[in-house]
Length: 157
Image (cartoon, rainbow, N blue to C red; front, side, top):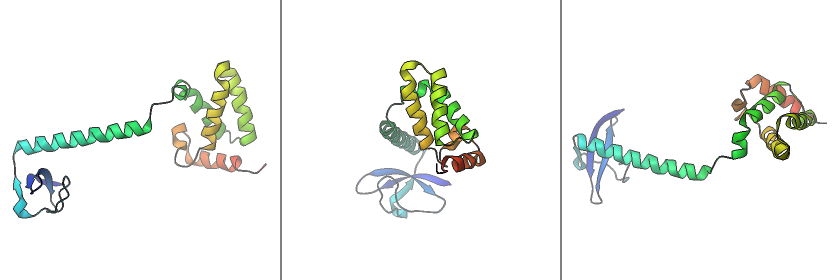
């Protein structure tokens, strides 16, 4: 919760900060310890400076995250509905590995262009192999359905 906006003056620079209702602490811009002597309340210009600082920081973080993620896979984008349907069907029907891979081959033969079938099968197989409790929801699967499928999937043989 914000108490008031203030300027914080140090030998290094003049920083803009928000003083919380919990009192003074460290400046979130320069890291210096804040004392009552180094703080003076300010008007609307300080709020503007905080907004600019936060916007620039957010933009640089967004750029860094965007760069680390890379570009979306055009193949996955093209086949996202088909990927969802086949993975969801395999889980809901509780197919084991052998039956699932056979189902993928048949389904791809009927629904995917000939030149893309091998890649489609590989992507679906990788999705199934990587399915875990942290990502099954993207396929609109309930936890109980996922656990039942996992039992069948992890059976030896």
